Amino acid sequence: MKAVITGDIVNSRAVEAEKWILELKQKLNLFGQEPKDWEIYRGDSFQLKVEPENALTATILLKSQIKKFKELDVRMSIGIGEVEYDAPKITESNGSAFLRSGECFENLKKDLLMIKSASKSFDKTMNVMFSLAGLSMNDWTPLSSEIIQISIENPEMTQLEMARILDKSQSNISIALKRGGFDEIQKLLNYYKDEITKL
Image 1 (spheres, rainbow, N blue to C red):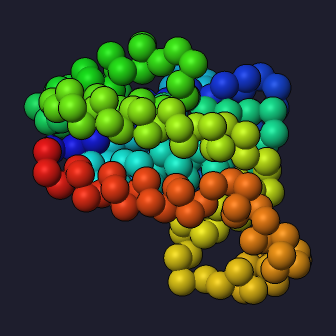
Image 2: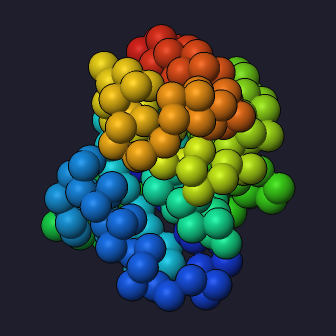
């Protein structure tokens, strides 16, 4: 079983592509090799193949990367399923994970993140939770995005260490994490990881 994330950048023309595309590639590289595991196509769309338990972490990290640019956002769908044909390029691969990711992406309306698996009850619960998480994630400021990204990538790092790196006060870090709903996002990630193992 694999997870396939399909995404595109919202409002991509508002910022020069070279500014955000390099940063997007850096984050995609954390999860695999181009073009077998990920690819950027049509200028502002991308696909990424990951282990199912890492899919939500990947989408939140990608969102935090793109939201560092205040004009931008990202729409993503997660498809959970099989990869029947594993091509050298992800965009030529096929299987239920790809089909579900594509179908789910076509159905994105107001929500910027949705999931589709073989389990309707899992999808229903997760998609309600994603909608609620979106209330804070879609309003992340560039600073909140950066702090949340560092927190997810470096779970051992203290707020004081982060404050030093970013040249901010520790209270600034604490406020940004609170505003960004970081504690709730952590709970969502833990719940997702527990539930995905039951599929």
